[in-house]
Amino acid sequence: MAHQALALVTVMVRDYDEAIAWYGEKLGFALVEDTPLGSGGKRWVVMRPQGGAGCSLLLARADGARQEAAVGNQTGDRVFLFLHTQDFWRDYAAMRAAGVAFREEPRHETYGTVAVFADLYGNLWDLLQPAGGNR
Image 1: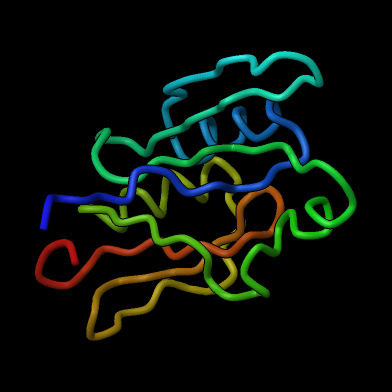
Image 2: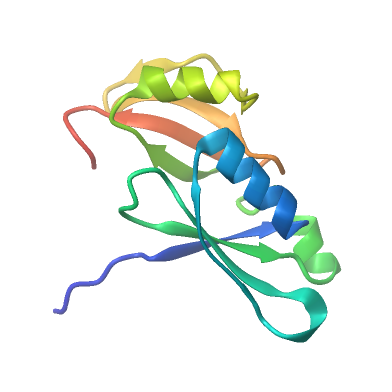
């Protein structure tokens, strides 16, 4: 079978610019692309974590009541995304200093060091330094 890779995950947002600012300022993500998609103000907005490898986020402005209701709760209050790091304590300190809302104290599990945080809309993420390298 040919090589495949997960390239983008859609995160619904209320506003493109506030989401770009939050992911850039709080998590240090890079804006990879911001392309207008014609009428209606839709844009193709891609942000990538530091290091540039792996999956990126496609920020999609919610359109209509159903999508707006899902902003911030795309997975029914479960952890939605997993941000891997090679230096948990460095990134944890930087994110706290930037005002990221952690929902718990860091903990050590068999799979690594982890703490749950919420993005600007309330989606839950794990900041995770995997034990023994990346999973």
